[in-house]
Image (cartoon, rainbow, N blue to C red; front, side):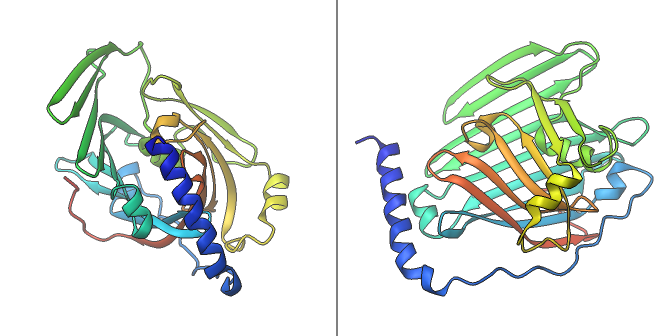
Length: 290
């Protein structure tokens, strides 16, 4: 039996055991306290600086199989910032995934008008047991050159690609802040957005759609955060980033565009993985990661 098959069968068995133990005492989730919108300031960096969001994530009957945090901090010189997304598995799931940890770091610079972020360097770091893989994307927009470096153990590879004239690559983390600041256009019900991203094997764009008012109203139903949720957002990114079949995600955000709840569809081994915001702070002085 392959390791993947063994892991899949083991997780299904754990889910069955959890059903017997948890199902009789399942309780309805409670809505959190209202989340204020970040105050829009004169620049995108000032608007989101020192914002920290903490999420829990789970699947099937393991509602807290991991946690993640998104943060943005100033990085040295004026106009430069570092956005990070860190996540790791927890509990019994950590054991079966060999304590997997993922870190995505986007090194950002404001454009001349200070109304959008441009990613100049993206670092994707994955630790699984004793295995450690780092992939670095460096964008040189003056020379129109993308350099991709991959390091795994003692092996290292470097590839250089050209960036088409006029194109800026927004990774998902950069796009997260640019979308919230209105870089791609006003955030409205029924709007769709196509965003250039770092080219991969299966995706050259990020596709984002905000559900219509009618669809949003129909799908709210008994959603625990319905009193705060304003927009239902559908997202499609490179499948390898979220380790899913098609890279599809959907989530609910507040009127101030703070994410409340999301689902990564068809994640390998786990199926739909659901994440929920559990803590949000704005304005703390933080240390830049790494």
